[in-house]
Length: 471
Image (cartoon, rainbow, N blue to C red; front, side, top):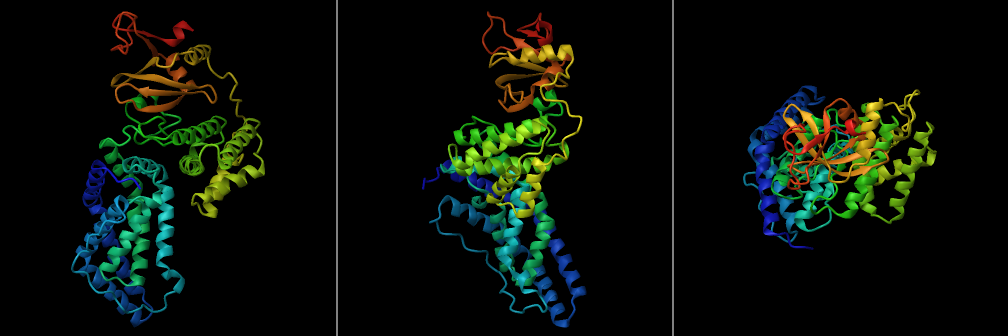
């Protein structure tokens, strides 16, 4: 195993040190909610023994709040140290913890007391909810540590690590097993709802530290092309990890490309409507994980590509995909951790005809105006590296053409300045051009390469040519 560099250790330590400030308010709210839960259990207790048990749990919680918080963050610190060096001595637990409660509460179903199972189920749910951000975070940790991309289960700040830290804190505070089970329910319903945003904040922190800078999830269909080019990279509904970022493996880039293009085509034929945005995000991340797990050239990779092709061909014919396609997708989702119900729901969402409008025009049909068609044809012939300018409130936003995907008709553009990459539908950009909101920017030969126009004015600086005027 590669020895982490001093820089990697510093970044992980700084991330861990930031957690109390990042999560302190949410943890305080969790403990307040838990106190209210214990109070409710006291009033609902069926027997005096049960009531006494919940009273004792509430007292332990009140006395152990400081110990609980310290133990929770120390648990996350131990997770980080274990990832950096499994052989390193673990820091001592906080002092002053109460002894564990010995009394069992009465009339509690034994099946409910499966603590590990409860935490595992919670972790699985929140791995799915934050799957895209965790995928990015795993890429960054892999690069930092000189290892393959880290799965969510291996991350020291993943849902499983959070669950272990929570359980350890509850024990240090002296909470009984039944009281801990109640804690996990409150934690699942409240605290962890903020977890996707927390993961995004942690990922952004490591990005700022220079690990895979610019690696981001980007949208397939921006609601506003110029605005997105300048602002929407961080919070749009994600679709792919940017290919080619420093440290990203060829397998990662290829897996992202395969899944992204398949979903893009499904959207263009109306198979994945906007109402399924959450399902789409989950499926993209899950199928990318599936491809990365098996790698290019594997039988699983080929089966994934073949299945995607069969779904796309059926969608183009406005026919339901073959039953084996739905079964394969469902099985693939289950293999990366989805439960049977969730896997079935997502598979049905991608293969059902319910989302396809009956009057849908063919993808190749010409529903563009003559001017939009000329602009589209012009865009399709641009050389890689050509600059395109978009009119926005902030002024002229510039982007360079990195790649053109003829099918399903997507432009990969990189914003000038920060180098952020995003996929845009060529029809959207063509429409912007037809409306005078976008231009092809050409530099005069005498000017230095890379010079750009300050405004779409043919008389000032490099020439900014409206695509429609030449087509």
